[in-house]
Length: 270
Ligand code: 2NE
Image (tube, rainbow, N blue to C red; front, side, top):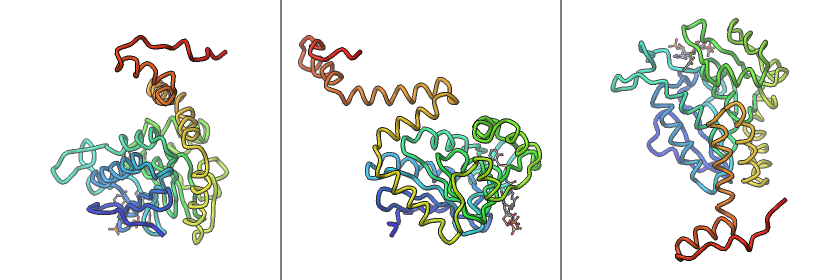
């Protein structure tokens, strides 16, 4: 049973249970299309989940059975981005994508119905994708005068291969859940009625495993594609681990105690 942490969020629902946080885009009337506020709230919820030490895995989903997310809300698309209530234009979903990638906890997309356009890229960016048998996938950018040449292109190509990624973007076709599974876009396809229970089962299995091992693996998987920023993430985790050792702490303690550090007492590993 999920605890409700939605609070003052208007475009999303936010729940927690047994080590899991669940972020639900709650705009079913537009197939869960996002506007700048939706993305801002998703960023806030993701940050909360990241800093909550009781949370080990994050689920990203959409309200209802018809859509995970249909991308940017075209009704508020201005001439240089998506308009907020103050009239400022944003492409803040690109920041959210980076935050999902750099979140040290696994993020799992739970997909019923359409994952389309920028909504398709959102599931792609997640570490794992669990699809219901009614899920449908695709990009629409070239049809609606848009594209995602960042992770939406490069990471997609590393997931499904260059030829398939170019097909997905150039033809703007839709693919059913089985086709998505066949091309490695999703990890499994389950009956719609079992979608949440199956997703929770996957998450509970992840939660039995070492948080640091998972964290290191996620940054290792990211490192190559993310270039210098990916190396920084992996290296930051190494620094965190080093801070957790007596050898690292000896340096801090010696500084605070105004003495020379005694690193000689630590084994030099081969
Ligand atoms: C998602 C899809 C395939 C669903 O089709 P269907 O037939 O199930 O529903 P329908 O009737 O098209 O949609 C239901 C209502 O939701 C609205 C529709 O306009 C419709 O409204 P009413 O006519 O009932 O008033 N709706 C759906 N998606 C919307 C959207 N994205 N923005 C605003 N209203 C939307 C079908 O609806 C579809 O193809 N939707 C458009 C997908 C799309 O092109 N998304 C934008 C891609 S660009 C992007 O996301 C992006 C990017 O490329 C780069 C950076 C940031 C964002």
